[in-house]
Image (cartoon, rainbow, N blue to C red; front, side):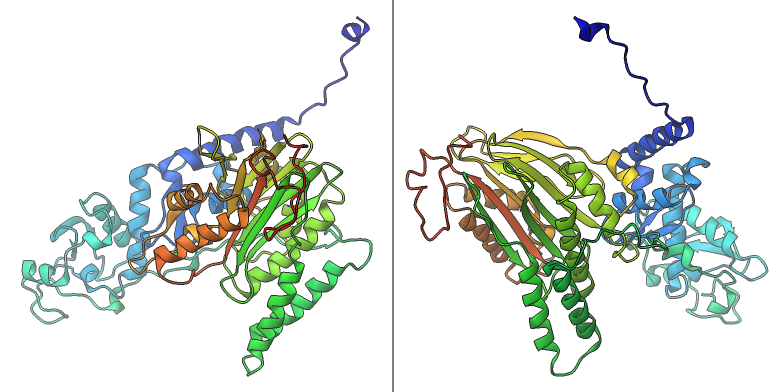
Length: 511
């Protein structure tokens, strides 16, 4: 009874400004995922367009995460109003015009009176005109407005130059006829700044390294990172006959940094790791947090090769230090985020999936930081396949204060016979000669088709083999798959003995 009579502790006061910003960010994040104006890209798909300013921001690996980083580092969205869908369509065309008007003759046909011929329909515009014989930014904006209102959805829908010439009966260059010539570049009076179409994000760099994670003294991982850094620098600049040897040395160092597959009571672990180059940008880690709990982590640094490999090395080093200090999944991810931002270049980030499994209860907590969901299957269940995890912000895009609000931990109960598989997009984005991707659905199909295998290594190796068979060629990105099989003692009566599939220990603790 005394418990109910106690005075409630004072609740901490929340700064009204922080509360306002948190509420504003939640609305912004909802808009990023649900408002079409916040997901518009340039026609080539390489740049995301800011719906407030109309600027193009480099986003070759997807718009949503880049948008979050951009808004986290710029506050103009707090004071402005986002553009409408029609205005965003006009921005698309304006950016395209700026980049192509000098090289595409179809965009430079003007009548003697200065009216522009719209290549979407071959009709002279009443709004887009040359002023004083020049095409300035105002002319380009009017041209973009005309294109946005036309039936052309994208540049490939525009009429050909021959079609336009037939419609006007004009010569292909300036002459004395005065009839709709193709104007020369000297008539273009606007300039294309880097902010128009090639803005790239540069993560803020800390001026002090006092906050960086470091162990109290040198460790084997420190030594490995130092060796990798020197090797990568040599590989990046040395093109003599010894380069292949250097790459091979770097590969061996990186492989040695990856964790050794541990023996875990009641489970079998397997990894399929195949970097695109000798060194890669994928990483995985399996480490014991306490007597009963294990951390499983799979990460994918954007890009591949030397720089991505250096980031993975630093990530592994940081993670091994972090897990000696933190036991909470979200705090581990936030600490990893703070460390990773030091090593990322402009526009780069890391997608991470992580899980903590209690081997005594089978309870699993999992989080997806920009990574896709994991696959869970069990051939003895009515539902053969489940997808686990809820999406959140990738590592390296924003500070931990924002990241913490964007990540979502979900809890699942693992049971005997369950097979958990997570993978990097190197397998799902493999392409055949027709440029068709293998895709997540085929990955899931390959997973289900191998569920009858008792050895998780056979499952993930088989999944990778099916993907390569589909594409008919080697993957063009790093490919990593991580598998956890919960042993079913009844289905695997010989589980207590060692065989070619590796050590297997009694799984009664998870039963």
